Length: 243
Image (cartoon, rainbow, N blue to C red):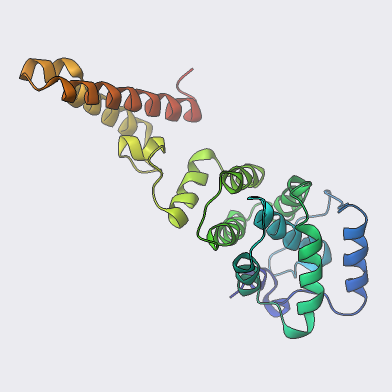
């Protein structure tokens, strides 16, 4: 099922028939102005025009985040959203208008977050779709990373939750503090602290010196200990128990 299909039930496709098409194009022509105070969607409620505009625009701007939109990215968008044949031309036009630059994407993300308030599962579905668009050309660009991290923040996901979602699509990030410490994203504070103390004991250069290991191993241990300390500090700051 497509992302919007999960939202709309019977209204699984884009609601773009007849009059709303003109409204969509008019909204886009008017510098993408969207009312950010729209009410949240009720369970089972069709997404409607405003949500549809926001979702198309956000996906298009995601594709533009690395500076260029590829056919692979457009094809991934079409696959994820299952655009019907009669709606294809209109949706493609809106997508291409919105992809001209990334300006304004935060307003669209905010609109979607407000309409899906209290439904993090669907917000995560949307992030999943954006990740699929980002990686569809075989390259995960720093601009795409920054875009997705900011959208996740607007959606209300914590840095730790964002890293979990990112890892599901791209694999572990060697710079991820949870990967460095080897703890799960949902590890308790006590578990994180206990693991940290164990790693410090095991990797402290003084212990290696006492064992008489070569100097190169001591240097590696010093670098590793610095990474462990930095990871622990980052997790502590995010969780609120480190300054």
